Length: 381
Image 1 (tube, rainbow, N blue to C red):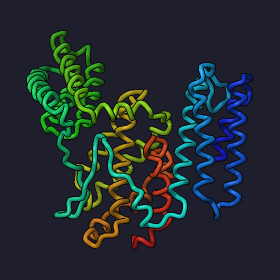
Image 2: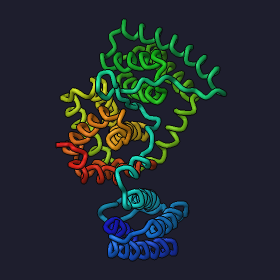
Image 3: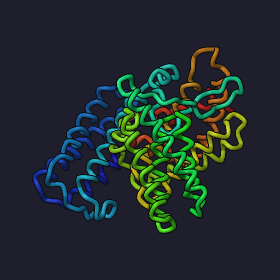
Image 4: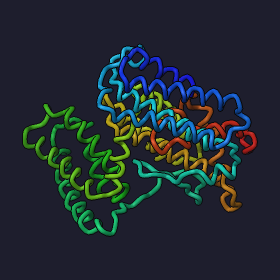
């Protein structure tokens, strides 16, 4: 944390304005508090971390100040808008402080009780106890009672439209990648499973449509464009998709972090392909979310959140089972610990830190560090 505070301070130091002066003052106070925490690392209390969090929140409040629209000149942030940098750094510092809070005096039982359940994402995971392996969870659409009738009726209509459009497309000379993208969208719609996955497939189909627009006749293009827009309208009927999009708007990952997470995801997928305890659809799911962030030079925030949330859900399933207390969960516990061992030895050193930068995923870094430090006590050889 100290290094991150130093970097932010250096970036804002050359700027002369009352607002920046106040920001620098807070950064200096934060650095002093961080040094104080480090000096008594064995006697840290949650109140010490709470003090850090309060200062970070004060720093974050300056992102609403209108006078931070200037560009920074410091090499690490050169050309970037000061407000965006401050928001990104404040979010990262907040994640670090929350991770520190989780990590204070954790035991396996205490950590297990803090682990969150899986969240709305393109993929969630489950244990197939009959076959002793991890699988992609089979999740039906879950509209709220209030929206169910309208949402499901709209869904049925768009499935009919998608079926006709995809049949017409497949009979044309369109590019195979375009056909595959829309066939996948139609398949996901017809499965009535995971509305976030449908939304992500719709985005992927939209990207393919833009990429191959010149190869389509005007009527073909209009038919597929109408399908994409129709699916978007249906998605808006589902609260889970709306909430997912709202969460995506808060994502503040730079291209380098996304590239690192994607690389780690592909490495993990390759490892899981060799595991008898992961069904084929698990590495396939990881490869799919990794591909979404690679289709555009500037990944959409929803694609970035899909990637990170899918990994977060996978890690949630593994750690909740690896640290389970109940005897009846012993088989899944052993499998989870084995996969964790493979994952920790395969991914890069920055894997957990990168994922923890997403709001709500702060728990990952502390959990990752705890599990890594205690692999032998888990009985993983």
